[in-house]
Length: 397
Image 1 (tube, helix red, strand yellow):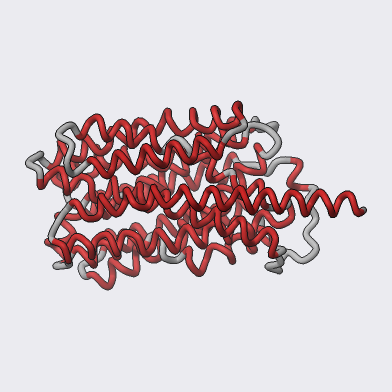
Image 2 (image 1 turned 90 degrees about the horizontal axis):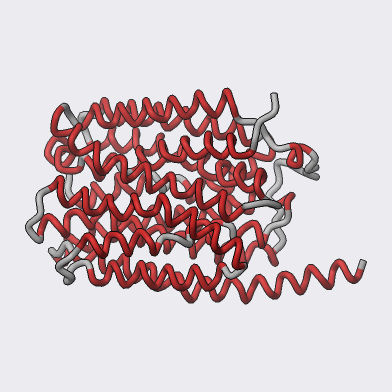
């Protein structure tokens, strides 16, 4: 059966929605979770970050295993663990059991997320890669926005446990779609790996892909500070829980258009560096003003526009990595991402506790977006050096 690349992108994008929907569930049900399990904001931040923590150790092995067992199988295993972890978390009556359930979901999410990016990259590497990655990436904030407008209400109407069970059900549907529909592209079938178990990335590729990973980590920690702690800031300013969540979710809804559009513009103009710098500056300014500006709706929309460069950032590894190193190389990329995402929410939660100010994690998020700018400049300097080295090697042959 012939499968169109846009059909593949649609299936993978739906699975990406499940990823965002499950990630946000802890923050969405946090009031009930804090009361029922008797935990503090530091522990709450730990549960949020725990979804990303396994990536510190699992991202590179996931990339290597995808060479050995195939992307589809690794994605399926990842989604299955996300289902199981959600069920364990929903059944938990203590912080320790909740910790285990969230950890299992996180291990699955890591395996899934690394190979998901590789799947999209291989289907679109010589075509609309920034646009396709932009579409896929926009589904994560879409899943989070969907969670923001539904999960708190469901938790109030029923219980936080049923919200968690719902995330497992969404992951189960995604698993069924990936298993039944996904096929690898013909070009990837022709790639021959000298040693599919090895981790052998040349240093000249390792360094720029690491810088790209740190850039992506900073970008996402800034975004997490917005949607995980922005609602609390607005509530402290006098808004209701539902209104505050709705205002924050608007910025994420905007990303449904801004991320694919940003990918398309960077593809057409050939100037991804400029787009990344401008959008990161806009996002940083929006978060910096949120504690002080009386119109949060405007800032939420501007923040959503500032996320437009996500596709261009995730396309960076495809510029630095050769085809045979794409699996483990994306593992390196996501290792740095997961380090940042595991540490960032915890530090943001602790920062709020120490300062007793809901503005602290939001302002920290602004700093993360600003830090993207020097790292993206560094990446392109390294990339220029890498291209020159490749040119000399080809010329020497």
